[in-house]
Length: 475
Ligand code: ADQ
View 1 (cartoon, rainbow, N blue to C red):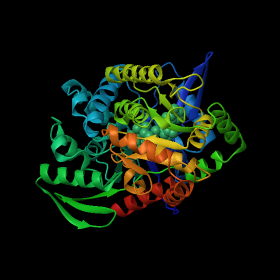
View 2 (view 1 turned 60 degrees about the horizontal axis):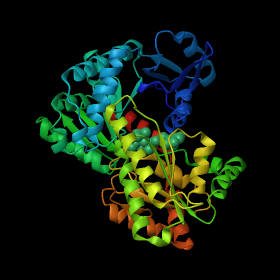
View 3 (view 1 turned 120 degrees about the vertical axis):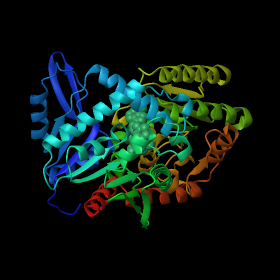
């Protein structure tokens, strides 16, 4: 990133840390996601401050832990404490039971509760108040994701005039769908208080512009660029762009080629010799299309008997949001489907589905990516989907095949060299499994090298640079 004098304020629902307590000893460590890895150097360089909910209760010695973090990581964290009830209503309730399903096209999963919405507004206001207390003239503010759509509007009420950027990690819905939200006007007005709005894909950017244009009569398009559109809203100008998020390609590529991962991958394969492994890696979430994927795998076995004993699906599911009833039901559904397929098709020495319900450590995750000849990334709807990119970056021998949902943001840039499927089309996905299984080596290599070259060029560091540079130019 180019040297610049602005201080960077990052704002997200959760601080990028894990606070833990083992046998009475409190500890704090940096989170491990790609976003944190990409932002850490920029935060260090620009005297960064990250604001968010620490994710722990009042019993933790937070001040001491945060000072320790600053000394070790080189940038500061500022907590926004939340009560249990606030977490319940703002985070589990409105964010995860209303906005999440609505924005993923799953209206049937939505719970529209006025109390949850009111708490969501209060918590967004609290975030804004905290930011207003610590921010200084010239700061650049970058707010992340759907939990904090209204922070920009409250910041303006607190008199904050600094450049405000917002990045939306999940899809932005069509006008038809967005209108179902009883509080759609306040939400879209709130978003229009940011100077720069970033989305994952051109489709999300267009959906947003259409919603703003139709719902707010004083909004007009004044300029269109390849990467962003400038809207005028009353006296203000708002840039709306698409910035497809990515991963740290080199980190995945180098670690996947290491001896440790190589050995772990070999062990995974040794158990299932002579077969091709299919891999699914997902958080437990109804948007990820896990039951549909299992049905497609089952259909492939029924339709193409030559696949019997020759393919196994390793489905890794990370427990997530298990407090929400829909997620508990989904877990039951997956358990049942895995049981059904294995009961019907297992033979001595072959189990069709290996189901792992836990988070994998880094080496194991990379070993799974390396060991699998085919990845099944088939969400019903997804902002981007980083697993698709991580799988390709780890395919160091260029021999993997990616089966990708056309409804993942990743399909925009990866669709041409992946096998694209509609995850609701069980028959079509079963056919894609067979096509991947029989794909000749030279074709695998050709497709995978293009995919890898593109991720290498458009990595997460470039994503961060592009967003910040556009934000700097937006004020
Ligand atoms: P998520 O919905 O969390 O993110 P995704 O982009 O797929 O979805 O990222 C999941 C992450 O979890 C990946 O980095 C993956 O490695 C990790 N992971 C998954 N299963 C794991 C396992 N079993 N063990 C260990 N790690 C595992 C939201 C949006 C996405 C968008 C991202 C980033 O929903 O669409 O791509 O933000 O903007």
